Amino acid sequence: MNLNDELIATITAEALAALAAVDTIEELDERFPSIVGKRSAFASMQKSFGSLDPEQRRELGARLQDARRAVEASVELRRIDLRAAARTTMLEADRLDLGDVVVASQSWAVTLGHAGLVGSTQAELEDVFVAMGFTVADGPEVESDWYNFEALNIPPAHPARGMWDTFYVDLGEPETVVLRTHTSPTQIHLMESAVANDSLPIHSVAPGRCYRRDTPDARHLAAFHQIEGLVVDHHITFADLAGTIETFTRAYFGPDIESRLRPAFFPFTEPSAEFEITCTICHGAGCRTCSNTGWIELGGCGMIDPAVFESVGVDPDRWSGFAFGFGIDRCAQMRHELSDMRALIENDVRFLGQFA
Ligand code: PHE
Image (cartoon, rainbow, N blue to C red; front, side, top):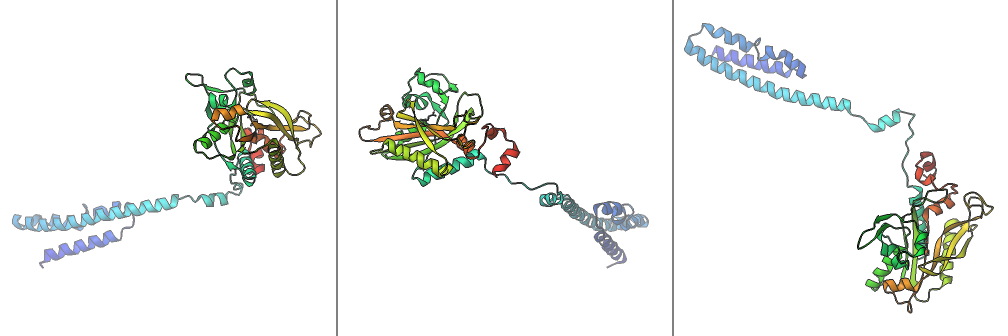
């Protein structure tokens, strides 16, 4: 190797060593001129070629240029590495451990969410009925007039429709569509599919949301929840209905709450009854919530009217049955002694937090 090649090899090695000693992008930018730039050994050697003859200058110049390009390529690779390292350091520094934040800030108590009162009441009611041998069914909240009224023996313009202040979704032809005013249309769905699948008898409950054009007060909400019960079997009597209501009341409210049935009218049951329990707020003494009667109405019930069996194709000579329907919100209210049901929808966390 001649002297010039040796010199090129040396300044290349020195440039690479200087490059290896650089730790940051800023340092690289600062030292770049002295490593391969204008102030580098490459530049000074280039300048010294001025005294050489053109042939030699070209040849040596090309070799020096190759060496310089190789160092420049290393500089670029190093720059990529340093940039990646800088980014990692930055991300590491910016990382926020939310667990640390919560622990560090002692004024925060960690609070977990929990099921709402209506939802957990519904689940408990379902459990009580499942334990009594019922299955749990479901039905649509938007119903045709036929399911909500007609099949339940409430023909169009029948005065009994006034019992339910209805939200209409569509008054059009061929069908009027409503937000269901009660869970009773699930009776129709259950019987229709049992007939279609030849799967009678039925022992089902169907909980869900209902809607009425009511002004909310201490005992009513415009969007509320009911649970419907339907039993269709052989030789079902009113005593089975009364026994079922009584068993449910004691299982859910406890042994000191009494239930009573009072004669009532519903177009879809005959005979019909209203089902009441001792007011749990005043224990029967009379208060604002029970309008001083000592009793709270939970819902209605009765033996399935033959006209309803007829509308779904169940033979009333072979089958009999009962149905009941009552308010889930009302159960929550009575069980937890809420003087005003509107608390259920106000979402005041001080109220909600009591039911965690
Ligand atoms: N659907 C009735 C109501 O909401 C209650 C009921 C259900 C009555 C089943 C009898 C039988 O008022």
